[in-house]
Image (cartoon, rainbow over the protein chains, first blue to last red):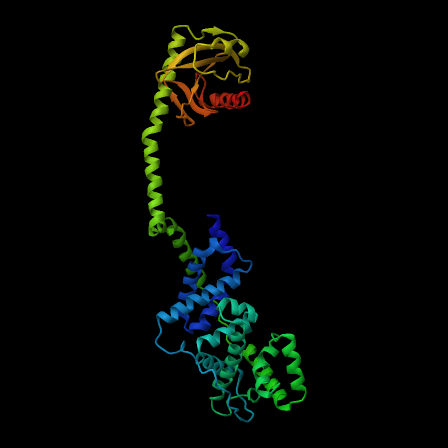
Length: 175
Length: 249
């Protein structure tokens, strides 16, 4: 089946990106692996209709949709409930600190898990996948303005979460 | 632009996603507002921190093989998946039904005719009455059939060093048909021709009683050829006859 090997040729190279996105969205290794496998199967089924020139973006959109289906199916928390549109960052005054790089990474990872999925999603797609606002708006099927405000709020909310670590644990540059 | 408004656009500005007009407005505001400049600086620092430290999770070693295994299963179940689409399933059943009907009827039709053609071929040889009109020239053979048949048969030469021996009347399927005989050394070919009358023959071939037999259809005529050659030899002759018939009609 030539179609099948063509599929693997086009999509297997993006396995890392697919897993990374899934892992950001559901924050559990096993769940992320399940989502990636399901997404590849979905992509394979939809492959005859694939006409685009960007298999990576197409695959990631499917990963993203698969993750959301998974989240809804396993919804036990309120991470998908509309978040506070008006939340503002409370300026946190902290002194300089000697927090290790390792520690900062741990805190960041921890803070990320507290964000709503929609926030993590735009962060990972923009910062790591390099998607434009337009590409995200298309994939997420929301207006461009929503992407703009969502990304902005995601960063501020993340700053806020980081600020909740005890004063002194936050590096000066994060204030 | 107010500070509140500027605040909303800082991220897009840093991201290089702010449209030109808004960008100009924002830059104008920033030029005169130290508070917003400071916000922009912090935001920029935070972004650097984020991109430098945010986790990136590479796919675990076993995942690739798991995905490939899932895809293998998928490939195999593609055919089975047909059965989950009710109307596709129905269509597949209908096609199978047609195929069964076709297998049940038409091969018999062609096979019966082929059997008769072989019998005629052998009888003519035994009776040494292969030709009613003996001539290598189609222009002689063709008019001989005038008034003897209710159709005008195409009379053609296959080439390949075959010579026409002549033609005769014969009977297949309870109707009069034209038969032509060609010879090349020991190779003999007899071709039976008659109008299809709405029942065109499928292209098929058999070995019957040591003779190669082939049926086909062209330009409203049915053809059955019988030969003492092997199948490949007959196929070659038939290819040439088909071409000749297409040109003639």
